[in-house]
Image 1 (spheres, rainbow, N blue to C red):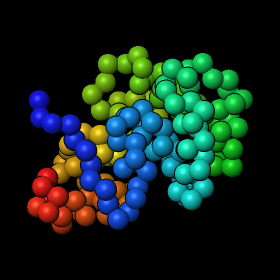
Image 2: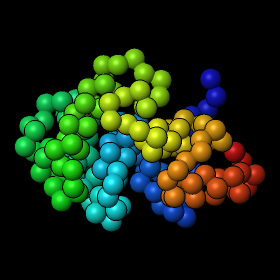
Image 3: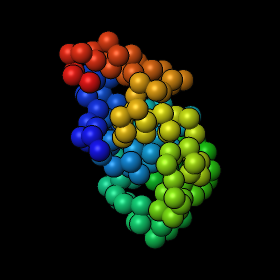
Length: 146
């Protein structure tokens, strides 16, 4: 087994760069970032992860509390259903990639592969910022010693 992958800090300061060490938190962030601007989502993500830092906390959380945590992001009921379904799968399913988990799509899966496991060379992100991050890694690969 190779050494632990630590994704380099980029000029883009993506939240995934802060959460790479905790795949559940990183994937929760991608649920918050779906169909909403980072400017709106980021403060909510930080509040959420402070209140419920672990998946077990979410499983015990009151649905109304969870609903309040995603207030003003749009699709609130869907988002809460996704957070709960994803968290249950994360804890109970035998999975290899997050795309196998409830509510996690290409963006979450690409984020996981770029930031949590050293598979950035294999990822073809559709997301603009993930693409910029991958391009930055590619351009700086030798300097960063990747």
